[in-house]
Length: 194
Image 1 (cartoon, rainbow, N blue to C red):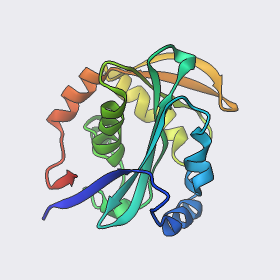
Image 2 (cartoon, rainbow, N blue to C red):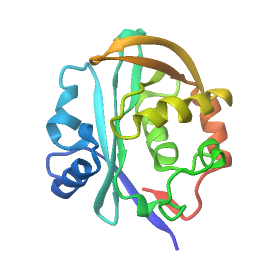
Image 3 (cartoon, one colour):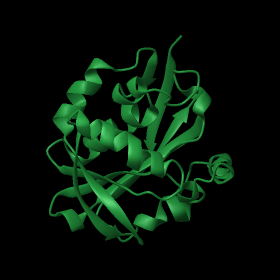
Image 4 (spheres, rainbow, N blue to C red):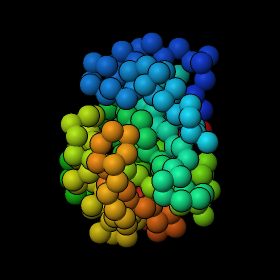
């Protein structure tokens, strides 16, 4: 059985009432409203928020925006990232439980979000993820486990720490060609992004 997903640019025409409520219930404070998830980028030179749908139900989000703090033609990707419907994931919704799951990109963020950000920014752009040790969402795990592991296999490079958006953040540069080559080896079968 094939599962079909759609990653659509945010629109005020979307009814995200249930999505925002579930994000709030799960403690994803950056995804609880349009103000928190979309309007926060109003002052950016360039930005885009996408909503992930499965069977016309909003189940996730991701954003990318200009990142002049890191230079010209630089973007911060994987902002406002969440997946609220874990049951739609291939591994029966159990999450990323093993080192192998992490290293082989067995999650929505790796399979769908990062490639969409690369497409939007342009593969030759400088793309960065910021992380920190705060408790919000799964941020601490991203900071202490996911990004360091992907850095060891050459997909990200730890650049520096900066004070950004009210907290100290670690900046990681995406090595897009390495990432895409590795992802091609682990592309989900039966899970199609339209």
